[in-house]
Length: 74
Image (spheres, rainbow, N blue to C red):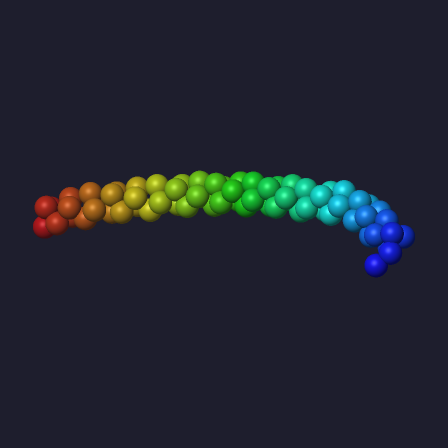
């Protein structure tokens, strides 16, 4: 390998390294955005499920109270 070949390789590596770093940083930023977006969706879903659970609890509680009253009235 001659001096010219080594200079060409050094120049190529010197040019590709910053491009590779930019690519990796971009992928990392995109991954962080996706992760935070997923967390938002998960939080929204959890809030929906909590609300539904409150409704179910109120229905079950009301039904048991009414059922108890009906049984007592018999």
